[in-house]
Image (cartoon, rainbow, N blue to C red; front, side):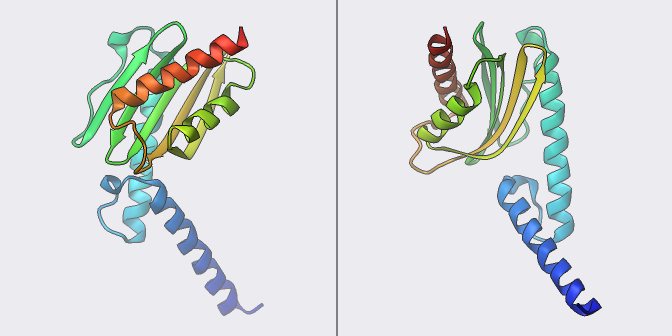
Length: 169
């Protein structure tokens, strides 16, 4: 393969990756459609998500969690014996942080439950420490989803986790 063909394939692959990355991010993180803006927005989104995830995972009470949202961002959550749930929402994209005790087949049941709520999972990260698991999810709220606010999503996820816990008992 010639150098020109190799470069052409590399540029094509980079453009495909950038296109996928752009679709995974809320529009508010991308100033323009150029490569630098997409990568810069992705870095900001990842750093913000990691920061919130660390704070959420290691927090010991409700007063220590960060509930100050950015402009256009709505924050809500639930803390209980079943799970601690934090939901942030920008336009039709929501980020969910769910900290709970590990249970058999919990992730599979959560993915199925979120799908039935018309929340499309764009990204999922699982972090475990001992018997505790933190699920960080980026979801798209579909147009036909009946959950319109962070409180609606938090309540629905809590009910889903309550059912999963009852089934495991």
